[in-house]
Length: 356
Image 1 (cartoon, helix red, strand yellow):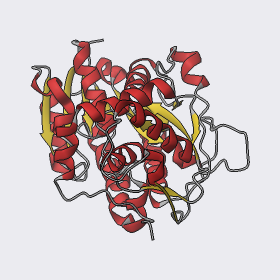
Image 2 (cartoon, one colour):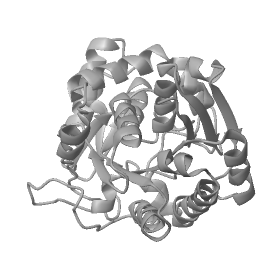
Image 3 (spheres, helix red, strand yellow):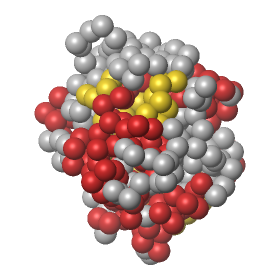
Image 4 (tube, helix red, strand yellow):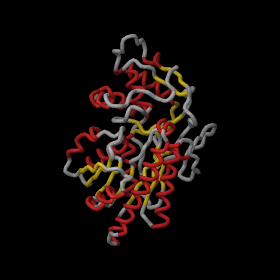
């Protein structure tokens, strides 16, 4: 299928991995619509940005006229919607921005897509797809249970971030049921890998360790997450949008349930091997681990049942947590200019719950 694929949020962490994958296939025309907020980084696109099959639109998904112009000019056959505010800590400090981008922005995009889709020929309408990329956090907390999130798990979001994503999910499904827009929805577990903005756990810990700074672990560090390597996620999204059943939801997970503290300790172990020359005054990286007060409403456990996408579409993760984590640490060691430029901006290595 020689699709013309519009990716929103294509300069973000998951979005840039998706754009790199799509352009690398050599058979898709790819447009990237991104506002270029603090966590977006065009450098993450690498050689894909120079491909004749790639074009970039700097625009806000809340800007109706700008979004409609992109549809008119690019004429996509597929929309893959990833643009979102996504950091739970920031949603606690400023929830309104999450509602604006994740809920209002998704509504604007859906309406632009619907009006564009209605103007297509019957054959083009039947081939059009709108994929909404969401999170497992909308399902809430599995604390005290051995259950897994399935596509039928009821929603119970805990944070302003997950609540805003839940709201956007409901809008997408409503546009399918009410207007017939051919949509699909995915829920992913915690992504990690190259080019992740260093407010998230894994890059935050890597860069703090390399700087000899404390490694702040929330609460007792026993919160469990399922970890998904970002390039595995990108492959899954393409499988879903090209071959998934319209109107369906697919959970995407890495089969890697790990406690946060174990993640940090594994990173310390890898750094001992891959970056043995430590900052002055640091005897062992794990000595930097510091327990800090837990953040409000922190869910204890997420775990994905990815059986549906494996059965129906034949997708499975290629990376184990061990192989993916090693690749990730090595990437940050090999790409210091990338993250040094990120850190030279307004962002600093701070988190809610600083060491006292």
